Length: 562
Image (tube, rainbow, N blue to C red; front, side, top):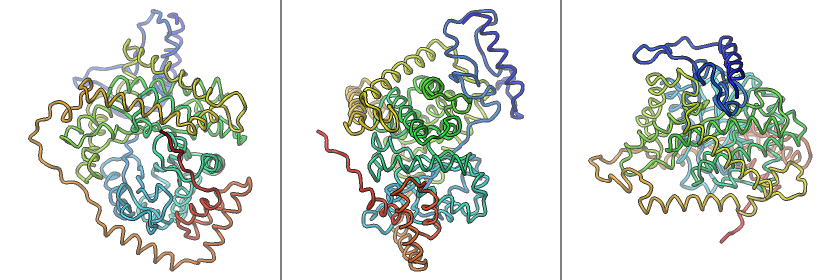
């Protein structure tokens, strides 16, 4: 790019920056030195390939979505939390919000994640252990008691039974008197990554895609601010993928959901802004920053050139980041505070829109109040004390970071081409990327490549080529054993007792009729969300709704592979 083109870009950025709202804050260094809101090539110089880097708030968005960077708005501190019953988790949410958290992120227990009620025999011993137990809309009411859902953004990390759980969230908001059309937040819903990595599915892929398509239509029409799909790379990375694989598989899944929306006749400029992403931030500091920058650039280019998006917001890749759970160690767990801080800083320098920082004890148990506060304060120290909010994309133009960004992008593009090849030549009713993803799931292509990457890394650890402090090097310690949070068995007994009471107090005929009406809708092209909402309003349980659909659609079992 020549000097005149660079100067014109800088002028465009300056005009947008001047017109944008900025926070009333001190944007000088700790010593009081004034810094510019963005930096670029020296005035009057050319920079070959600068169009791939660009300016913040301008296509291809390598340097961020907004011309102000974090001077306009900092990232949202969104701490992931959930344990025990709804009342216990509600207390933790109020602690997070009271301590300065900007949004909520719900962790559900394993029975809920699998669409089972707390009294299901398969739920025995699991209720409330890895998240909060939610059986009915009344649980959801208790989860957000005293928290105005019209005034807080809420993320829910759940995929298989995401749609009925979201209906419970809507009914809880209704019972608060909220205007549902104004609700804001994110539902994970991403079923592709379940088959690829996490394995919390209910049905075959096609019925899940039916529900996701219905949800996309419903939110676009009724709740335009709510993001019905958060495409998750986090679980792919935690399963052992490389950074490039995490990026490529996640964006490919996102392209699949774009194809799903288009197959429903939706306008890409309307529904694409409702797609968001969820990435892992691991310990290789510069690799992670490059990954985030490449993600924005790839998404903008594909949405524009492949899927025909024309509006700016449809080209924006907005993402939440969580620090790497798999990087936490049970050995010398206090070291995890350092790991988390480094990973969080990488996410911030990569331009994350919201962030969760893991607690030091999460490799052992759910976080205690104290460790949860340390995790929250880690973000606040970064935000308030380090100056990282002063300059947009401060590493932009670094030879190393730009080379890494280009390399990760190139690796991702190679993977996209291979996925599309997996789909074959024939047309798929949804789209070519979707066809390749479904074939890759069926053939074990994704899981095989992730397993190979995990094996290579494990070999490097065992040989000592890769180091983990406290595990295969610097193992001596004076640290004492941590006190951890333990979930009492009484939580499960009480949840089962309360659920039995609710079932006894409701109108059984109304529940059966509402669930039957939902199943009837599943046999047609009718959008299932209104019928599912009616079932939830009648206090049908999550397990009853999911079991009715299991009976209709069957269950998915992963093929055995050797």
